[in-house]
Image (cartoon, rainbow, N blue to C red):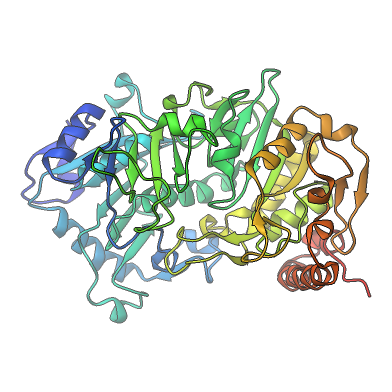
Length: 527
């Protein structure tokens, strides 16, 4: 039982369901009418009108000392302590007088770096979600479990005075770093809990000199670790789930003096158009214990993976144990290869290119990709965007803090860095086609087995990226995007347009610090 339950500040609580097993959670979900069972034994839930995160509704309390470190602006919004206090009362009122679910987990596989997190909710499936996604403590670790941070998920509460409070809608996701509390209201989307704690790890670890990264990671039989950076929908989960390598994790990692460690104990995979042929490991992971979101079932309980009627951002969370080839410790040594994944909506970037150290810093700080449909509210088709460090939405500190840490570690461990485009080829979105998973996997395999280093490289015009002239069975026309377009003149216009976007975006780093002026490593428009 939870010690000092009164410390949560909830009144007239009914039953407390604390650290339930998977079987117990599924029983509660069915009894509460929260889920449906699929033909493979997984459960599926509907997250309501919110099928993605609400980044404009995420706030940090403006108070000392954290306000000295947070990079305030379009990503990290301020809220006064008084508003937090009011909404915390609202959240606690919503959770009072109810049966509640409490789940205790760890964020971070490294004992030296992990944080203890407690989630409080009135919804059984939300308890199931965090049990899947975070690291599940052993029984002996739960005996004296003391949370470093507590999340109150009062998703049924809304802020009717949001305009008066200076918020952006009746939805609120607020972090009080000093009081070690987060509150959620108005949105049922599970990803708010996952990414909320990721944001907090991105605050805590760099201040300790440890790197926090939006990346997936796996390790080969020779002990060679690879990191895959990329925004939602660029292929981090798909490409790091490899039958020939052991998965460390699919989304969030730390890098300290000992090596790489997962923040999580589960995976959160997109399942739109999922098939056994394309992604067998993920497909087979959808069994009892897995929790699907916003998918459509037929009369027999079979998931209709191609059905986008609810959202394109259909998801599944499952414990990492559902992947046969995973590293039980969720830790590995320093990386041999780092891969930056981008979904280029312009169809300009090559499927694979090798970066030198300066280019690596440039493309890390640029974080170019496309926002893929449905992963955020209001995004219905891919649009070009720049997200620093391939995860600016989750970075409380200035991007250069993370870039500096990454640069130091890349140099110290002589890491090879590559840019891989999982986006469009033969034209922009709407004209060209999406890069095939087969070709992308061939690029990744050549990086991981080192065979790409045996290729002859040719630099492209404008972006000056080093591209292999041949790579296994991949059509050379695909390797050099200009050759894949029907009209080379159209490609040149698109290339120069994208190059100018890179140049314009990078001005903020040139202005911020001479130390981070890697603009010479970026594109240069040639007459």
